[in-house]
Image 1 (cartoon, rainbow, N blue to C red):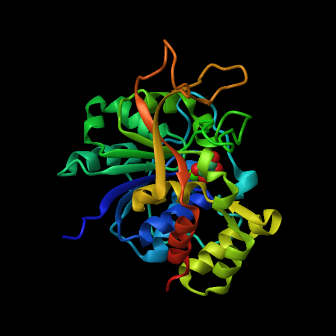
Image 2 (image 1 turned 135 degrees about the horizontal axis):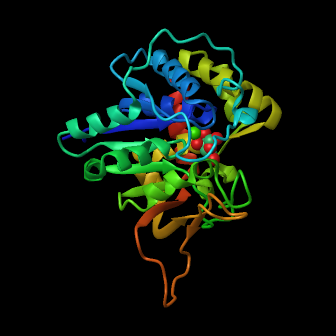
Length: 317
Ligand code: BDR
Ligand code: CA
């Protein structure tokens, strides 16, 4: 019997790679996106919702709900990544406003409702932005964690490869650095977490290259034209693009391409220089070795097969 698609909620902060990750999920028969929640991060939560609607409209998926979550990190001021993602979060691509609308309810309530409705506890939540919304869900509804099948996050820099260092500070990755208190709640929750961090997503063999971008640009379907447009400015400046969020989503679509190891990780919230660091137990042996709340951390990806999967979905008609 064919496997039933994994049902997903995707929580996004509205950047360029977020949009590409949504496209990958929406084109993949292995998963079924039931809802998209938005969070403050790369751009404001309202803009993240506009950008999610723009992607969903490409596919005319009116059955997928889109809702705004929290507009600020739990206790800190937001940081934005508009210098990289553009003021609109989509590379200053000047796309038309979407016609579809967000749901009126808060994403936090909709996530809880959706989890309570799921019959077989099969719902996976994929967080490709700061962990603010999911921390709020866990805090407001302490009994809900048992209903989350899996939490897959793009975030962290775990020091488990030579690329596993920070992209906002020497040690902190953007999604964790943006709301470390939220990340701490999630990492201490005991939920089954798989994390795909910079250790893998920053590795050059996983970047979108100029040659690959040219293939997308040369293909003229609705999805490839959209992707070409949102990538244009950054490809012109940097000649490469790090596929952080699509790589994370790919771990739900084709888990066999990914290698994970289990480690205990603590989130630094009080550091003078290290706030947002994902402090990872890398010791093999020690009397006081950390073993609590282990999470699965991605250490390797079959790059060529991932690229084939990702580009295949961008290029197909
Ligand atoms: C993460 O930060 C954001 O800018 C990207 O969208 C990705 O989720 C990478 O550190
Ligand atoms: Ca993101």
